[in-house]
Length: 411
Image 1: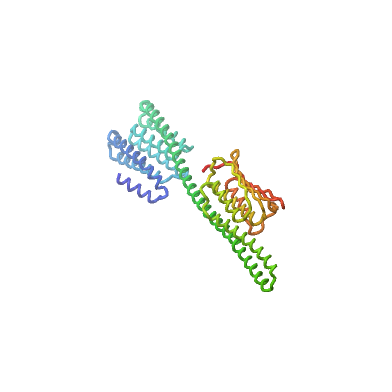
Image 2: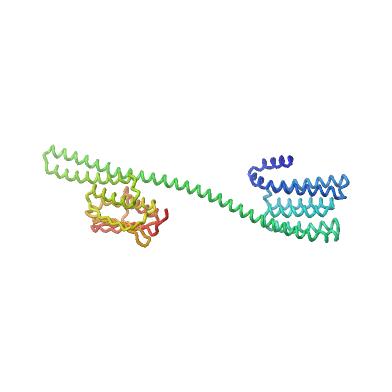
């Protein structure tokens, strides 16, 4: 056994990529070696043909070669040609060993092990079927060669029953092994896919955070930077008019400056609100948002919520809140509205957010100007929750934005 262990380690070192498969096959080859060694020893003890030194030495050499080739098969017979050569050589060695010993029990054992190994090693294939048939035929043929018809008659029945049981067992074992290997491979693929999904989710989250930071940077630039820059220009103009004594012109500029300051303040508060953590309750978050908007802009906003006790998934709540924020921010900047209506309803498993104003309206079929991404952002959020964003607007007739989520997703 020590020699076999060293031999196995040597083969494993030559084929590291198949080391795992060889390790799994080691118990089978150990059992096979023990069976052949025990049967060979019994044959040597009982067979009259092996009482002489020359047949005995020849028999031992052939059996050692036969067992060694069994172990070498674990190295990996990949090509069809190498498998055919292996089976032919093993078949020849088996016939030689049986003829030297003249023992029918050796014929049954050696060909049965070849049949079992062929099915277990190569699976169910055309080569396997042909090889099993050949080894099956060689067994009774060996009986005829070493003992004639009398020996064949004595051993045919146990041979048929033994071979039938062995073949059935090995076929079932091989199918179970293939099924187990497929399940293991599928589990590994699923694990890899799960890791990839986790990585993709992390990447998407990072990209979302980056996009959100960039959006907020644009928002602050459009509100604070531009608003303050405009106020600076108006203050400089006021200073020039005061020096020239044009007080009426100064008063007009002051009115414009107050409007710009209020607008800048409202936009800034809206941007800051987006940076805050939204309340855990969706209804509460929307109410707070509407109150802050009304306080900052002075625009009346009617809120109607008809959602019952239904709680939306957090992912949907977040996108709904952002769409509402973006819509209100666009109204503040562009609509010149004096009234806003916000509705949140849930009916027939369809959630709807509606924001309507009586402002100046616009043409929704015209592409937005460069740097204006509000509508595009709302459409993207609707797509992320498998919803739909509808915009209905006409010049001087106001605008209505509807976010529809047809099916509520699970948390």
